[in-house]
Amino acid sequence: DIQLTQSPSSVSASVGDRVTITCRASQGINKWLAWYQQKPGRAPKLLIYAASSLQLGVPSRFSGSGSGTEFTLTISSLQPEDFASYYCQQANSFPLTFGGGTKVDIK
Amino acid sequence: QITLKESGPTLVRPTQTLTLTCTFSGFSLTTGSGLGVGWIRQPPGKALEWLAVVFWDDDKRFSPSLKNRVTITLDTPKTQVVFTMTDVDPVDTATYYCARRMAMGPFDLWGQGTMVAVSS
Image (cartoon, rainbow over all chains, first blue to last red; front, top):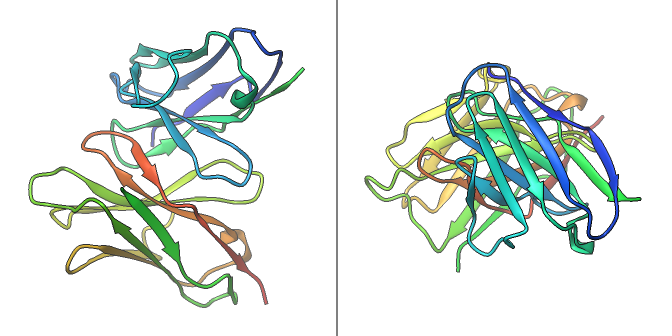
């Protein structure tokens, strides 16, 4: 199984801050990584797929990069509605796996 | 409008079988679409865990950790996916989500989730 390690597990930030979350895969997954946002009591929402493709309707302040084993999700200017948990997921091979999550909260 | 909705029991006794149904609309698992419908769960306060997926051609994949306990069925006329898990345990307490899987891709659309507690 491909393990995904997210870091940090939590981050405190202020509105307007730039936030970067890293996801490392235990083996190469090409570009087949997705990022999700999840707010309390809600289903996850797809933000980024294929490492860097922005899902329709997602604000452009979200961006993804990387390939192989290291990936990043960047929020260029944190907005109040961005305080949430974020998960990466590899779609390269079965079994599909998710990272452990990163919680972004208010400093 | 594309929607997915999970339904099933909120409480299951240990050792029983859990059956959940995902009813979807606004898309179909047509021949060659590459689409699938999967199940993902999330124990309270924990991370997401992928469980199973069924594709348009009835190809099925399962999490190795649950493979002997779970089944997934695409019901004709391909508007429902039924997920079953046998011999449940309190550690199976979680919110269970169904979601559409894009071809060679992520889960782009999710149901609202259904909370299932396993307790005697």
